[in-house]
Figure 1 (cartoon, rainbow, N blue to C red):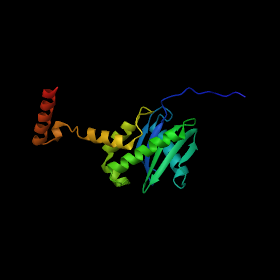
Figure 2: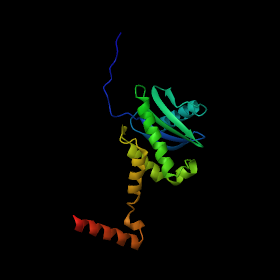
Figure 3: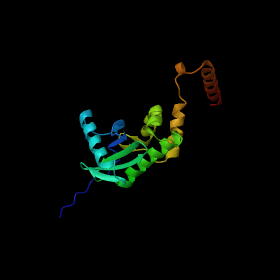
Figure 4: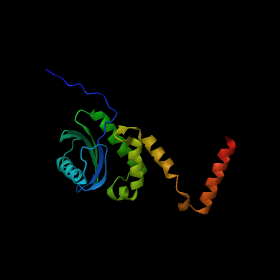
Length: 177
């Protein structure tokens, strides 16, 4: 009996999706060329939603991929990996994303609140996964890093007082070095 041994890889996540309760895409980030066109991605998302929106389980094998998912009020969160991927790793990414958003949105994880805070979602996903590689699985760290990036508001969008305060801080830190 031949057994195929697969080389270990850091590229564990193939996609992160958030769909609403109608199966429409709110957020999708694909990390490889499994579904290269938007048309193929949307068809895949419809297929995933039709198979998972009425079940209470947390994992599915679909089209040769491992899909872990969670639903909350009117949102469905999906993390997708290859069929041989460790489900616990994918679930850690999913839980980190959900818990991070829950903290950032003050436990109000629903469609409207998510749409109002899309920049926070983009930053959180970028902190958790980069190019398919899992970077962070601690929601506290993700929320902290997103909050730090949120403070880097461009000078054109700040008031004069905020710009002067920022300049004072920079001068103070340069003198302390």
